[in-house]
Image 1 (tube, rainbow, N blue to C red):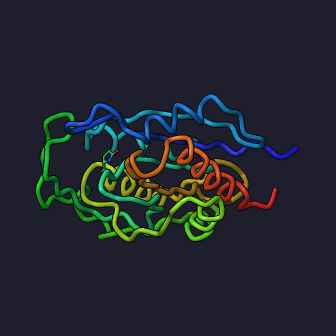
Image 2: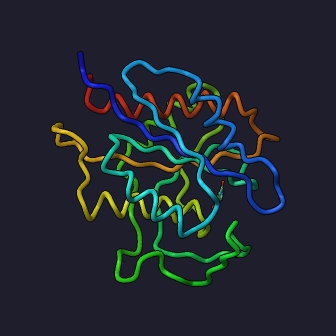
Length: 204
Ligand code: PCA
């Protein structure tokens, strides 16, 4: 039997004036389930630039796949993010009171990274379930973009590859809309579809 894929699924705690975060709720729903062929680890992250960027980098070597979730309240569709940029430019404090302007996440690091996950197939699988979903070309400049950039930077500089397969860790960030637009249970179904696309990459 094939070794299970080690998958890390993260969400964020609430931030700003809201007291909920759909990404946290989706992770809570999915962590109760079991998925054939997947060893699932979950984590709810603080909405704080410095701890999350440090933490995610320590995790990459332990996982075959990483799916990070966050909310983009103003969006009406599920957005599979294509790109993370090396920029922190906040319009509000993070949950640690840090409000960087025009700052790189890492000095002397590339301007941007593209996801190395099959984002088009993920978006198609989500749309096949009937949920509105698109590829987004901006994860913003707040904490979601920062954790995504840190994950892709770690993969790029360390060529993280958790096992003998030779396949690098794959990472993707998915922004969820407000649950005014899509119920949390449907968002959980959508994330499951993305997760199944990702783990099919070795064909086992
Ligand atoms: N959304 C924010 C940070 C945490 C979250 O859920 C963002 O889009 O950056």
